Length: 257
Image (cartoon, rainbow, N blue to C red):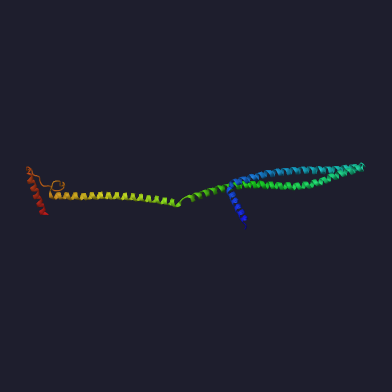
């Protein structure tokens, strides 16, 4: 392969690529319909002209046929009147119109075939245009769907899936941390509450034991249910005497234990 052939192919390939990129399918369909409609208008004009020509030829043929018959009658009339020369002239005129009628009949037959073909072509073109309009709407819908799909695919390709998943993972980690903090707070709150009740129970035991000890030692502040020493109406003793009495009572209680 020569260098010029390779250059020509490269140039043709590039031109074809540019043409393909420049072609808008929707606009191309619209243009194709317009061109077909223009062809339909021209074909209708051609059919109309062909029909008009056929009508003229048909009229000329009918006129020639009528003239032929007329001069045939004239020839017969001349013979009946004994004018052979006039009859001959009438037959000559008949021959002229007969030849003209023959040519017109051939042309009329040809035009009839042509008109019939044009009419069929006109019907076919009208059917194709109607079909093309239907296909155009279908193709436009497919083009719209294809563009939407292509745009969606472009958006999907443009998305950074790794970064998106990393963002989801970060959000999930934050949610888990928040849930852990909430659970820890609940556990701490429960622990504080249990410790408070434990302290209350411990305090109650100490108070009970203190009350029992007071009752046993008959010290002031004992509970009303514990037996108290009889009170005497003797005058109050000196502080030292009171202390000595309490110590003596405590010793007796200790001896009894």
